[in-house]
Image 1: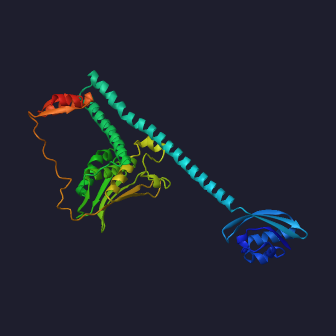
Image 2: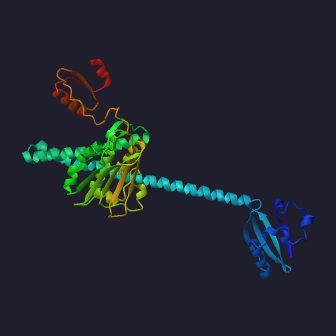
Image 3: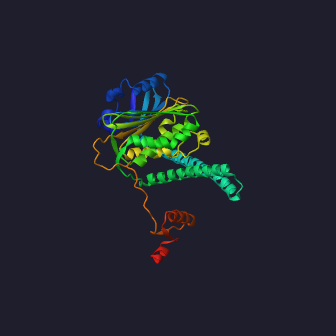
Length: 397
Protein backbone atom coordinates (compact mmCIF):
# COMPACT_ATOMS: atom_id res chain seq x y z
CA UNK A 1 0.00 0.00 0.00
CA UNK A 2 1.03 3.58 -0.39
CA UNK A 3 0.63 6.33 2.16
CA UNK A 4 0.57 9.86 0.75
CA UNK A 5 2.09 12.41 3.10
CA UNK A 6 2.24 15.60 1.04
CA UNK A 7 1.49 16.64 -2.54
CA UNK A 8 0.40 19.84 -4.23
CA UNK A 9 -3.35 20.36 -4.12
CA UNK A 10 -3.63 21.57 -7.73
CA UNK A 11 -1.99 18.35 -8.90
CA UNK A 12 -4.77 16.23 -7.39
CA UNK A 13 -7.63 18.40 -8.52
CA UNK A 14 -7.99 20.02 -5.09
CA UNK A 15 -9.29 16.85 -3.42
CA UNK A 16 -9.86 17.08 0.29
CA UNK A 17 -7.72 15.32 2.89
CA UNK A 18 -10.46 12.78 3.62
CA UNK A 19 -10.78 11.95 -0.08
CA UNK A 20 -7.04 11.31 -0.30
CA UNK A 21 -6.39 9.28 2.83
CA UNK A 22 -6.54 5.53 2.31
CA UNK A 23 -6.65 5.76 -1.44
CA UNK A 24 -4.16 3.97 -3.70
CA UNK A 25 -1.53 6.40 -4.93
CA UNK A 26 -1.98 5.35 -8.57
CA UNK A 27 -5.74 5.93 -8.38
CA UNK A 28 -5.03 9.53 -7.47
CA UNK A 29 -2.35 9.96 -10.15
CA UNK A 30 -3.13 7.58 -13.02
CA UNK A 31 -1.06 9.71 -15.42
CA UNK A 32 2.09 8.73 -13.47
CA UNK A 33 1.63 5.03 -14.21
CA UNK A 34 4.46 3.80 -16.42
CA UNK A 35 6.67 6.83 -15.78
CA UNK A 36 10.08 7.03 -14.10
CA UNK A 37 8.26 8.05 -10.92
CA UNK A 38 6.20 4.85 -11.09
CA UNK A 39 9.27 2.68 -11.67
CA UNK A 40 11.26 4.28 -8.84
CA UNK A 41 8.46 3.77 -6.30
CA UNK A 42 7.90 0.15 -7.29
CA UNK A 43 11.63 -0.50 -7.05
CA UNK A 44 11.72 1.04 -3.55
CA UNK A 45 8.74 -1.07 -2.48
CA UNK A 46 10.33 -4.23 -3.86
CA UNK A 47 13.75 -3.56 -2.33
CA UNK A 48 12.36 -2.03 0.88
CA UNK A 49 15.13 0.57 0.77
CA UNK A 50 14.79 4.36 1.12
CA UNK A 51 15.46 6.50 -1.96
CA UNK A 52 15.38 10.20 -2.85
CA UNK A 53 14.92 11.68 -6.31
CA UNK A 54 13.52 14.67 -8.19
CA UNK A 55 10.73 14.43 -10.72
CA UNK A 56 9.15 16.90 -13.17
CA UNK A 57 5.37 16.65 -13.05
CA UNK A 58 4.12 18.03 -16.37
CA UNK A 59 0.71 19.02 -15.04
CA UNK A 60 1.32 22.53 -13.77
CA UNK A 61 4.97 22.33 -14.87
CA UNK A 62 5.91 21.41 -11.31
CA UNK A 63 9.08 19.92 -9.84
CA UNK A 64 8.95 17.66 -6.77
CA UNK A 65 11.60 16.32 -4.46
CA UNK A 66 10.51 12.83 -3.47
CA UNK A 67 11.66 10.90 -0.40
CA UNK A 68 10.56 7.28 -0.24
CA UNK A 69 10.78 5.19 2.96
CA UNK A 70 9.85 1.50 3.54
CA UNK A 71 6.92 1.05 5.95
CA UNK A 72 5.15 -2.23 6.83
CA UNK A 73 5.71 -3.86 3.44
CA UNK A 74 4.63 -0.64 1.81
CA UNK A 75 6.23 2.76 1.39
CA UNK A 76 5.80 6.32 2.63
CA UNK A 77 6.25 8.95 -0.06
CA UNK A 78 7.08 12.53 0.95
CA UNK A 79 6.66 14.88 -2.01
CA UNK A 80 7.89 18.48 -1.64
CA UNK A 81 7.24 21.14 -4.27
CA UNK A 82 10.67 22.50 -5.27
CA UNK A 83 9.64 24.35 -8.43
CA UNK A 84 10.81 27.72 -7.09
CA UNK A 85 14.15 26.26 -6.04
CA UNK A 86 14.69 24.59 -9.43
CA UNK A 87 13.82 27.81 -11.24
CA UNK A 88 16.18 29.75 -8.97
CA UNK A 89 18.99 27.29 -9.66
CA UNK A 90 18.32 27.49 -13.40
CA UNK A 91 18.35 31.30 -13.31
CA UNK A 92 21.55 31.25 -11.29
CA UNK A 93 23.19 28.83 -13.73
CA UNK A 94 22.10 30.98 -16.68
CA UNK A 95 23.46 34.12 -15.03
CA UNK A 96 26.72 32.35 -14.20
CA UNK A 97 27.06 31.17 -17.80
CA UNK A 98 26.37 34.68 -19.10
CA UNK A 99 28.89 36.13 -16.66
CA UNK A 100 31.47 33.54 -17.67
CA UNK A 101 30.85 34.24 -21.36
CA UNK A 102 31.17 37.99 -20.74
CA UNK A 103 34.37 37.48 -18.75
CA UNK A 104 35.85 35.27 -21.47
CA UNK A 105 34.88 37.82 -24.13
CA UNK A 106 36.49 40.62 -22.11
CA UNK A 107 39.64 38.56 -21.53
CA UNK A 108 39.79 37.71 -25.23
CA UNK A 109 39.31 41.37 -26.15
CA UNK A 110 42.14 42.36 -23.80
CA UNK A 111 44.36 39.65 -25.24
CA UNK A 112 43.64 40.77 -28.81
CA UNK A 113 44.27 44.39 -27.78
CA UNK A 114 47.59 43.53 -26.15
CA UNK A 115 48.67 41.49 -29.17
CA UNK A 116 47.63 44.31 -31.49
CA UNK A 117 49.56 46.94 -29.52
CA UNK A 118 52.65 44.73 -29.59
CA UNK A 119 52.30 44.26 -33.35
CA UNK A 120 51.56 47.97 -33.84
CA UNK A 121 54.70 49.08 -32.03
CA UNK A 122 56.77 46.63 -34.09
CA UNK A 123 55.19 47.54 -37.42
CA UNK A 124 55.54 51.29 -36.84
CA UNK A 125 59.11 50.93 -35.65
CA UNK A 126 60.30 48.63 -38.45
CA UNK A 127 60.12 51.22 -41.28
CA UNK A 128 61.82 53.78 -39.05
CA UNK A 129 65.05 51.80 -38.79
CA UNK A 130 66.01 52.03 -42.49
CA UNK A 131 64.65 55.59 -42.70
CA UNK A 132 66.78 56.77 -39.79
CA UNK A 133 69.80 54.73 -40.86
CA UNK A 134 69.91 55.95 -44.45
CA UNK A 135 69.07 59.52 -43.37
CA UNK A 136 72.10 59.52 -41.09
CA UNK A 137 74.33 58.28 -43.91
CA UNK A 138 72.97 60.93 -46.27
CA UNK A 139 73.71 63.63 -43.69
CA UNK A 140 77.33 62.48 -43.53
CA UNK A 141 77.67 63.09 -47.27
CA UNK A 142 79.82 60.00 -47.88
CA UNK A 143 77.53 58.11 -50.29
CA UNK A 144 78.20 57.93 -54.01
CA UNK A 145 75.43 58.59 -56.54
CA UNK A 146 74.29 54.96 -56.69
CA UNK A 147 74.11 54.56 -52.92
CA UNK A 148 72.42 57.93 -52.59
CA UNK A 149 69.66 56.80 -54.95
CA UNK A 150 69.37 53.53 -53.03
CA UNK A 151 69.04 55.49 -49.80
CA UNK A 152 66.35 57.77 -51.24
CA UNK A 153 64.39 54.85 -52.69
CA UNK A 154 64.56 52.96 -49.38
CA UNK A 155 63.47 56.00 -47.39
CA UNK A 156 60.58 56.63 -49.78
CA UNK A 157 59.44 53.00 -49.76
CA UNK A 158 59.47 52.70 -45.97
CA UNK A 159 57.85 56.11 -45.48
CA UNK A 160 55.02 55.01 -47.76
CA UNK A 161 54.73 51.75 -45.82
CA UNK A 162 54.42 53.65 -42.56
CA UNK A 163 51.94 56.07 -44.13
CA UNK A 164 49.81 53.08 -45.20
CA UNK A 165 49.84 51.72 -41.64
CA UNK A 166 48.72 55.09 -40.31
CA UNK A 167 46.03 55.38 -43.00
CA UNK A 168 44.69 51.96 -41.95
CA UNK A 169 44.59 53.06 -38.32
CA UNK A 170 42.74 56.23 -39.27
CA UNK A 171 40.26 54.26 -41.38
CA UNK A 172 39.58 51.84 -38.52
CA UNK A 173 39.08 54.80 -36.20
CA UNK A 174 36.56 56.30 -38.63
CA UNK A 175 34.80 52.94 -38.98
CA UNK A 176 34.51 52.45 -35.21
CA UNK A 177 33.17 56.01 -34.87
CA UNK A 178 30.80 55.60 -37.82
CA UNK A 179 32.49 58.43 -39.71
CA UNK A 180 33.88 56.63 -42.76
CA UNK A 181 32.28 58.33 -45.76
CA UNK A 182 32.03 57.60 -49.48
CA UNK A 183 32.30 59.95 -52.46
CA UNK A 184 29.99 58.08 -54.80
CA UNK A 185 29.72 58.43 -58.55
CA UNK A 186 29.78 56.17 -61.61
CA UNK A 187 32.77 53.86 -61.07
CA UNK A 188 34.31 51.73 -63.82
CA UNK A 189 35.48 48.56 -62.07
CA UNK A 190 37.89 47.59 -64.84
CA UNK A 191 39.73 50.88 -64.29
CA UNK A 192 39.57 50.41 -60.51
CA UNK A 193 41.13 46.94 -60.75
CA UNK A 194 43.76 48.00 -63.29
CA UNK A 195 44.86 50.86 -61.04
CA UNK A 196 45.16 48.52 -58.05
CA UNK A 197 47.14 46.04 -60.15
CA UNK A 198 49.68 48.72 -61.04
CA UNK A 199 50.39 49.39 -57.36
CA UNK A 200 51.31 45.75 -56.65
CA UNK A 201 52.96 44.86 -59.95
CA UNK A 202 56.54 45.55 -58.84
CA UNK A 203 56.10 43.51 -55.65
CA UNK A 204 54.64 40.64 -57.69
CA UNK A 205 57.49 40.77 -60.20
CA UNK A 206 60.02 40.69 -57.36
CA UNK A 207 58.58 37.28 -56.35
CA UNK A 208 58.18 36.08 -59.96
CA UNK A 209 54.41 35.82 -59.48
CA UNK A 210 52.24 35.41 -62.56
CA UNK A 211 49.14 37.63 -62.50
CA UNK A 212 46.31 36.62 -64.80
CA UNK A 213 43.38 38.96 -65.44
CA UNK A 214 39.97 37.86 -66.70
CA UNK A 215 37.63 40.76 -67.50
CA UNK A 216 34.17 40.07 -68.92
CA UNK A 217 33.17 42.56 -71.63
CA UNK A 218 30.53 45.24 -71.09
CA UNK A 219 30.64 45.18 -67.32
CA UNK A 220 29.29 48.70 -67.13
CA UNK A 221 29.49 50.78 -63.97
CA UNK A 222 28.59 50.62 -60.32
CA UNK A 223 27.60 53.47 -58.05
CA UNK A 224 30.53 53.80 -55.72
CA UNK A 225 33.63 55.53 -54.48
CA UNK A 226 36.32 54.53 -56.96
CA UNK A 227 39.12 55.40 -54.55
CA UNK A 228 37.69 53.28 -51.76
CA UNK A 229 36.91 50.40 -54.13
CA UNK A 230 40.49 50.55 -55.38
CA UNK A 231 41.56 50.33 -51.73
CA UNK A 232 39.51 47.13 -51.37
CA UNK A 233 41.07 45.53 -54.45
CA UNK A 234 44.54 46.70 -53.42
CA UNK A 235 44.11 45.06 -50.00
CA UNK A 236 43.10 41.77 -51.60
CA UNK A 237 45.92 41.91 -54.14
CA UNK A 238 48.59 42.92 -51.63
CA UNK A 239 47.56 40.01 -49.38
CA UNK A 240 47.69 37.65 -52.35
CA UNK A 241 51.19 38.87 -53.23
CA UNK A 242 52.29 38.70 -49.59
CA UNK A 243 51.06 35.16 -48.94
CA UNK A 244 51.80 33.54 -52.31
CA UNK A 245 55.23 31.87 -52.51
CA UNK A 246 57.86 32.55 -55.15
CA UNK A 247 56.68 31.61 -58.64
CA UNK A 248 53.01 31.29 -57.68
CA UNK A 249 49.97 32.57 -59.54
CA UNK A 250 47.31 35.18 -58.83
CA UNK A 251 44.12 35.42 -60.87
CA UNK A 252 41.96 38.55 -60.89
CA UNK A 253 38.51 38.07 -62.42
CA UNK A 254 35.77 40.63 -63.11
CA UNK A 255 32.46 39.06 -64.12
CA UNK A 256 28.80 40.00 -64.15
CA UNK A 257 25.67 38.28 -62.87
CA UNK A 258 22.11 39.49 -63.35
CA UNK A 259 22.29 41.95 -60.47
CA UNK A 260 25.90 42.16 -59.32
CA UNK A 261 29.39 42.80 -60.54
CA UNK A 262 31.75 40.18 -59.11
CA UNK A 263 35.44 40.67 -58.38
CA UNK A 264 37.53 37.63 -57.46
CA UNK A 265 41.15 37.47 -56.36
CA UNK A 266 42.41 33.88 -56.43
CA UNK A 267 45.89 32.90 -55.28
CA UNK A 268 47.99 29.76 -54.89
CA UNK A 269 49.34 30.92 -51.54
CA UNK A 270 49.48 29.61 -47.99
CA UNK A 271 45.73 29.22 -47.66
CA UNK A 272 43.64 29.67 -44.52
CA UNK A 273 43.00 27.18 -41.73
CA UNK A 274 39.27 26.30 -41.47
CA UNK A 275 39.19 27.44 -37.82
CA UNK A 276 40.33 30.94 -38.81
CA UNK A 277 37.99 31.43 -41.79
CA UNK A 278 35.15 32.94 -39.67
CA UNK A 279 37.59 35.52 -38.24
CA UNK A 280 39.32 36.67 -41.44
CA UNK A 281 37.44 39.99 -41.63
CA UNK A 282 37.62 40.87 -37.93
CA UNK A 283 39.56 43.88 -36.69
CA UNK A 284 43.12 43.31 -35.46
CA UNK A 285 43.04 39.58 -36.27
CA UNK A 286 45.81 37.55 -37.85
CA UNK A 287 45.94 33.79 -37.95
CA UNK A 288 48.81 33.46 -35.47
CA UNK A 289 51.90 35.18 -34.17
CA UNK A 290 54.11 33.40 -36.69
CA UNK A 291 52.09 34.94 -39.54
CA UNK A 292 52.60 38.42 -38.09
CA UNK A 293 56.33 37.92 -37.60
CA UNK A 294 56.86 36.48 -41.08
CA UNK A 295 54.56 38.65 -43.19
CA UNK A 296 54.01 41.78 -41.09
CA UNK A 297 50.92 43.97 -41.14
CA UNK A 298 48.37 45.02 -38.55
CA UNK A 299 45.50 42.75 -39.55
CA UNK A 300 43.31 45.74 -40.48
CA UNK A 301 43.15 45.63 -44.27
CA UNK A 302 40.43 43.00 -44.64
CA UNK A 303 38.30 44.53 -41.88
CA UNK A 304 38.47 47.86 -43.71
CA UNK A 305 37.70 46.14 -47.02
CA UNK A 306 34.59 44.49 -45.57
CA UNK A 307 33.30 47.80 -44.20
CA UNK A 308 33.82 49.57 -47.52
CA UNK A 309 32.11 46.80 -49.49
CA UNK A 310 29.14 46.72 -47.11
CA UNK A 311 28.81 50.50 -47.31
CA UNK A 312 28.41 50.00 -51.07
CA UNK A 313 25.58 47.54 -50.40
CA UNK A 314 27.78 44.61 -51.39
CA UNK A 315 29.22 41.47 -49.86
CA UNK A 316 32.72 40.09 -49.41
CA UNK A 317 33.63 36.55 -48.43
CA UNK A 318 36.55 34.15 -48.57
CA UNK A 319 36.94 30.48 -49.41
CA UNK A 320 39.97 28.27 -48.85
CA UNK A 321 40.35 24.47 -49.03
CA UNK A 322 42.88 24.70 -46.22
CA UNK A 323 46.48 25.52 -45.43
CA UNK A 324 48.82 25.42 -48.41
CA UNK A 325 45.93 25.35 -50.89
CA UNK A 326 45.41 29.02 -51.67
CA UNK A 327 42.41 31.25 -51.11
CA UNK A 328 39.66 32.93 -53.12
CA UNK A 329 38.27 36.32 -52.08
CA UNK A 330 35.01 37.35 -53.71
CA UNK A 331 33.45 40.82 -53.76
CA UNK A 332 29.87 41.34 -54.95
CA UNK A 333 28.74 44.88 -55.79
CA UNK A 334 25.24 45.90 -56.88
CA UNK A 335 25.20 46.58 -60.60
CA UNK A 336 23.98 49.99 -61.76
CA UNK A 337 23.51 49.90 -65.55
CA UNK A 338 22.03 53.40 -65.99
CA UNK A 339 24.63 55.72 -64.55
CA UNK A 340 25.91 57.32 -67.74
CA UNK A 341 24.46 60.69 -66.72
CA UNK A 342 26.57 60.76 -63.54
CA UNK A 343 30.14 62.10 -63.58
CA UNK A 344 32.74 59.36 -63.66
CA UNK A 345 35.05 59.16 -60.66
CA UNK A 346 37.82 57.99 -62.98
CA UNK A 347 37.81 61.22 -65.00
CA UNK A 348 41.27 62.64 -65.36
CA UNK A 349 42.22 65.36 -62.94
CA UNK A 350 42.48 68.90 -64.30
CA UNK A 351 45.93 70.25 -64.94
CA UNK A 352 47.60 71.90 -61.99
CA UNK A 353 46.86 75.62 -61.72
CA UNK A 354 49.64 78.16 -62.23
CA UNK A 355 50.39 79.58 -58.77
CA UNK A 356 52.80 82.26 -59.99
CA UNK A 357 52.26 85.40 -57.92
CA UNK A 358 49.33 84.02 -55.94
CA UNK A 359 49.48 84.82 -52.22
CA UNK A 360 48.88 81.77 -50.01
CA UNK A 361 48.65 81.59 -46.22
CA UNK A 362 49.85 78.29 -44.69
CA UNK A 363 48.66 77.57 -41.14
CA UNK A 364 50.08 74.54 -39.32
CA UNK A 365 51.26 74.10 -35.74
CA UNK A 366 53.82 71.50 -36.87
CA UNK A 367 56.95 73.30 -38.02
CA UNK A 368 58.26 70.56 -40.32
CA UNK A 369 54.91 70.19 -42.09
CA UNK A 370 54.60 73.96 -42.42
CA UNK A 371 58.05 74.18 -43.94
CA UNK A 372 57.59 71.45 -46.58
CA UNK A 373 54.16 72.74 -47.67
CA UNK A 374 55.51 76.26 -47.95
CA UNK A 375 58.50 75.06 -49.95
CA UNK A 376 56.37 73.10 -52.44
CA UNK A 377 54.04 76.06 -52.95
CA UNK A 378 56.96 78.44 -53.44
CA UNK A 379 58.43 76.09 -56.02
CA UNK A 380 55.13 76.44 -57.91
CA UNK A 381 55.52 80.24 -57.90
CA UNK A 382 53.25 81.16 -54.99
CA UNK A 383 54.00 83.92 -52.51
CA UNK A 384 53.73 82.09 -49.19
CA UNK A 385 53.22 83.36 -45.68
CA UNK A 386 53.33 80.70 -42.97
CA UNK A 387 52.11 80.91 -39.37
CA UNK A 388 51.69 78.39 -36.57
CA UNK A 389 48.25 79.21 -35.17
CA UNK A 390 44.80 80.48 -35.99
CA UNK A 391 45.39 83.65 -33.96
CA UNK A 392 48.50 84.47 -36.00
CA UNK A 393 46.57 83.76 -39.20
CA UNK A 394 43.87 86.28 -38.22
CA UNK A 395 46.54 88.87 -37.45
CA UNK A 396 48.15 88.37 -40.87
CA UNK A 397 44.81 88.61 -42.65
